[in-house]
Length: 118
Image 1 (cartoon, one colour):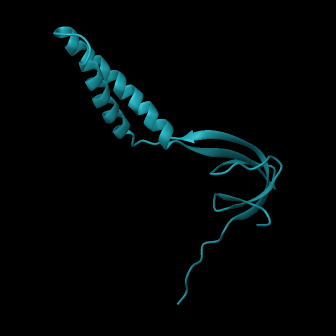
Image 2 (tube, helix red, strand yellow; image 1 turned 90 degrees about the vertical axis):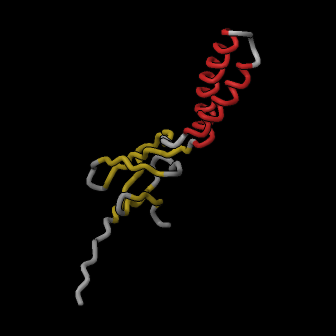
Image 3 (cartoon, one colour; image 1 turned 180 degrees about the horizontal axis):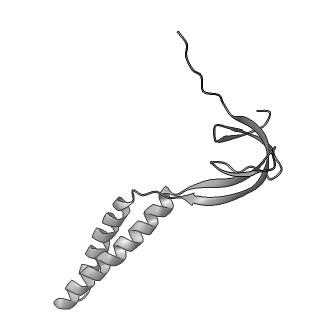
């Protein structure tokens, strides 16, 4: 029985540069909802009559915005867009979870980056 084996692209390269950027998290409704409830409750404590209703709405909106921002910061992860100069002189950008110093020899294996010699 013949099995086809996909070749691994293993390339020795030199790290040209590295820049950090946040990885987006698209599931942040929890902080928004909690912030809206807390803000609405706090806003309801202020004013009377229609003013109380308005403050409740404003508190809910403000709380939702604040809760969303807090959750974004809590869940944020940092990734590094690493520019790698390949042996043939071309440049590739590879997203990596850890910073690597410029000039470090690295290997690119199926789109993944690792320090050469490890």
